Length: 293
Image 1: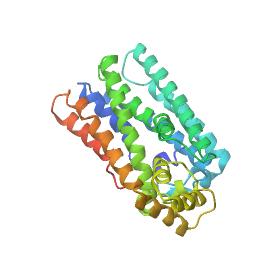
Image 2: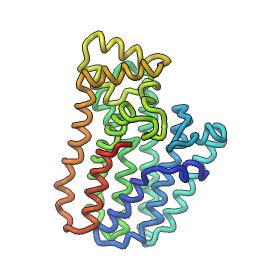
Image 3: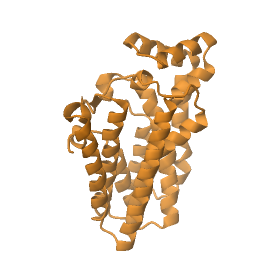
Image 4: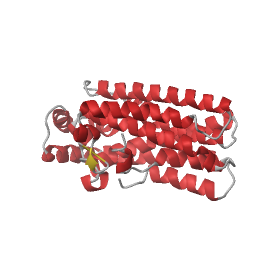
């Protein structure tokens, strides 16, 4: 169960929860169990995601199913899922708020499952619209960032209205995070990523990069990219797909869109007093859409 959690990772979601707690005037120590629960939820989804995608590496080490087998990996993911709810009940807050947070995380996990199913379905479709893709990543990725900001803020004493505003801000930046993650999957090295580069292309995933490239590229490049996405690919095929994305303008467009989400939340951040919590929160959001791995 500890294999993937101890392998590394950026810990963005727990950090966001702790900073949201501090930004509304709370003591981040009270939010530590909730923050740990979010990271545990995230790792549960990674373990199961690697099984479904047949990815062999995670954080630079063999994925759970590659190391221990599919059955053990599924069981470990299930145990992590349960452990997360156990952690939430240890949060230093009222019984009423703990119940609210348990329900909130349960809804979030259900939405993540819906997003994952959309992602799987897209692999069997020739066309996916930008709107469909954005809804998929909102569910699969962004809502957990939203839960981090919401729960951290509520534990810190924020009203439901204030916490919902922070949740929406985190969801918006989470969209930029996933677009940038797709960008890095196509452009960064395996050493930086800790997993094989170009895995989305090899799996035929309809990321925003692919959607934009198929919309912008020449007919010849569209046909070639579609062929690459539909078959077993060599490293040369993946490199050719990335080249098509670059010359079509898809890479540049997705880079710009990821940054646009960051710029869009600055007005919400401006409502909070200047100080270290806000500065760190803003630095975290910026890192999410500018990181190199």
